[in-house]
Image (cartoon, rainbow, N blue to C red):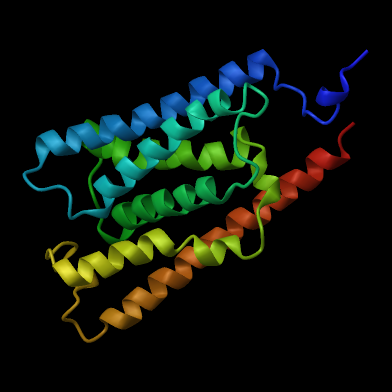
Length: 208
């Protein structure tokens, strides 16, 4: 017979699920910190670049997600809202796609491989395949996931570190157009993730 005090308490997540998701998210955080540590040792001033800031953000987010069950007594392995995971996925996708296409960057070094490919793919896989709260994504989330790229752009314009060559030059006549195109692309990518998350949730809801 259940205690009345516990009647409304959600069931604990299975121990295997909890251990597996926690280990996975620690691995994602490790990927982010491996890339960041390598960049810090290889570059004289890596902090102006979005890649290093995004790696630090992903590492902190996924350490927090790995520790989240400690604050719920093992009853939940992630928050109800997927906003933070979605924001991380969009930011890391921006880093990956921009570096490999627009900048035509190299993956020859281990740290670059982790920062620009391994960590973005791991964060994307976590949002699409590992977590379950993405079914709770709201229609307006993709509009707000631009907050971190937009904050970096504001810093970039203020600091003017001279990165990324001519394609992102605050002094160029087409700078505002380039920024607008990037922000629209980020929102579009967010809505792709939104659509996939909702579709996956509908499929799971039909399963017995």
